[in-house]
Image 1 (cartoon, helix red, strand yellow):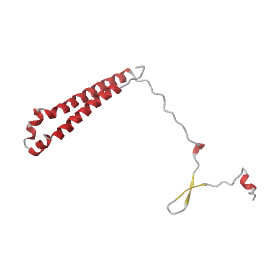
Image 2 (cartoon, rainbow, N blue to C red):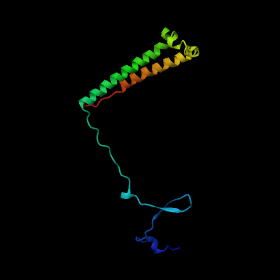
Image 3 (cartoon, rainbow, N blue to C red):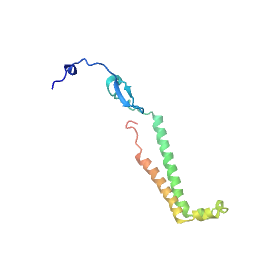
Image 4 (cartoon, rainbow, N blue to C red):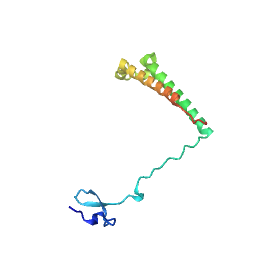
Amino acid sequence: MRLPMQLFSDELPASPRVGMLAHNGESEPHPEPIGGGPVLVMPPPPSRPSRGQVWMQRIWLAVFVLFCLEVGIILTVLPWTRIWADNSLLLGYPQLREFLMQGFVRGVVTGLGLVDIWMGVAEAVRYREHPDA
């Protein structure tokens, strides 16, 4: 069987590409991509931070780490002290006081304190500066 020569010709009739079918069963024309392919865009090289920016990052890191350590130590120790047990704010709420005196609640608060300490230490260890800073 021979195929017609028209199929091998460079001059094929121009017809719009047919896209996906719409909900009603009719096809829609699909526009050709502009430029003929994907475009690779590279981000600009990172600029060197100024001395002020480097010192602001250092100060922010120190404040964050100290805050995490302070809150973590308070949350770790506080549930096991008399301040937690003899709290005058809870005198009007005996059921809440009883709930807060449960061992698992104290353990959860202590665990949150340990996670907070871990966050501060991990942030301090992970901190890296620009090599030329």
